[in-house]
Image (cartoon, rainbow, N blue to C red; front, top):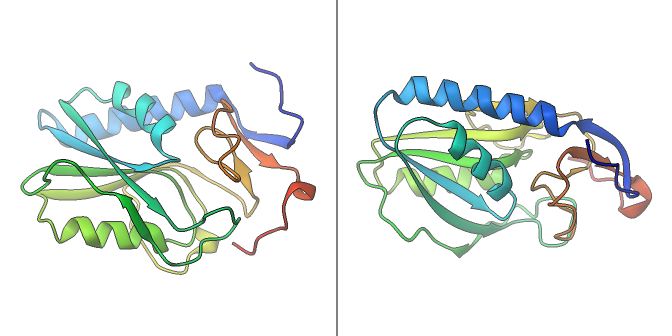
Length: 185
């Protein structure tokens, strides 16, 4: 295990726990889609680390596409305004689409993206999230595959960031509160 970063108050989910849970999700997804192709839609930037591991854990034929959105900027809270920075580069109509997200908290961003993609007529549309903070929900979204339910703490690592830093940490940790103003979900 790697050493703890000095800005981290404590590790919440270890690298090993993430690896085990990602493998479990990959098996479940493989079973659910048995023999069918899946198009993984990675929500950038945060989900790229998780999606790389998840894609390797899925045994079905997989294609990957990326969509870049912004709703946080440099804040610890979602603004509620979702901006598409980079759209998909392939059509999804008639395809099995699995949205891959790093964290679902307010649900505003994911609800917007799911609606946008539903309007493009996929064969199926499901959501896989590495982490979930249901206590922060402002808009309900159905998460079909969930890695971990998190407490109401500001977390970073394994793709999750603060001001675009800490994504490279191999675990999910709680950022020391003196480095930011504590968000209310």
